[in-house]
Length: 488
Image 1 (spheres, rainbow, N blue to C red):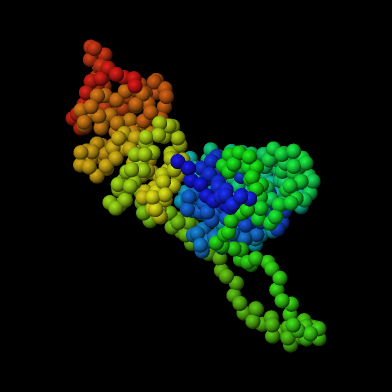
Image 2 (image 1 turned 30 degrees about the horizontal axis):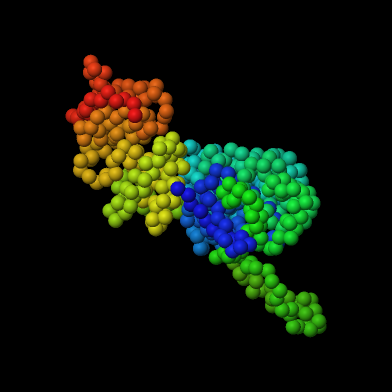
């Protein structure tokens, strides 16, 4: 299953789409000079993909905080928290899958780099159970991964560059898909830029930047001249998540804007020179103007405890741990989704976090506002689907489901498959069927699994003189039928 978003149209008016699942695996690099529409492109991508995937935005200018009101992103004003609190917040962001904007605009450059590095590193080092898929958007990436030393200390540059390198080089296996945007490719560290497989190249004029853009797009140097002619909001797109050949795309409209809005010409003041001089230098006028401004209170940032609670509340109340059954009105739809996923031959070999993200997308495609349960419950419900148990409310399966509470998650699907066959009096599942449910292709692992389950009293293995195997489930008082077809 794929989940695509529309980011704009080509020169013929046909929509240009990005496959979000492919993007999670292949990352994205956006390049464009100031005024080329780079931030507009990122905003369009974030708005369109907000219902599909978690988003973490590293925002050095505070441009994306307006996503909070329209799409529910949690804004973290980095200047209001210390190092310990930033680590706590980043940990909660991974745990609760909250979409956040880390606003760094109240910090100096070196503090921005250290804060962003700490935030990214904490998410990178999250426990394996929290490796949920997420888009990590870093605007002005040349600040956090500079190609050469600048005005910051070597230690700060090393820490920041290391965090960005981890994000782009090793983040994929942890569910973190880097989307980096830069004004100049020449200022961005090459080992960070090189890890992106998708590109959206906007207008640029310097020869060195055009040469690097041409190399990334697979264009000849003389063809790179076309990059100079791109209009504002127009980009050359290429990559497995977008298209296989470079195509010009006009970015579509957005729903939100920056806090300052768009910059355009305004009528000049109509005051005469004398009146303007009086306004600037007359002490009475200065006092009259400055007094009201001094009375405006500065907004007080939320405490770290309040913000942590806000991040935790981003997880839907319907995703409570321990409730295996979804609401009755959605039970049939959810069962159908799980059954469809279980039919995929390779489903058991995929990470649980990736399967859960696929499940969430499928639920939203069925017009569900939120997934009916969390990752832990999904892991057990999906094991039931792999075993062929789709109606969890059927009393026929209740004894087996209750018994399964004693079984570890990794061997739950094989146990349920054996128990289902025992209840139905069906032949013993083959080694290949058990291997698929267990997520392995090794016959040796299947044998060790069955022996482990028998040592723990979950099953009893029997083999008759004809070499036919049957498996009993003592707590159910039932056994599968004998079968000599141990291979599919």
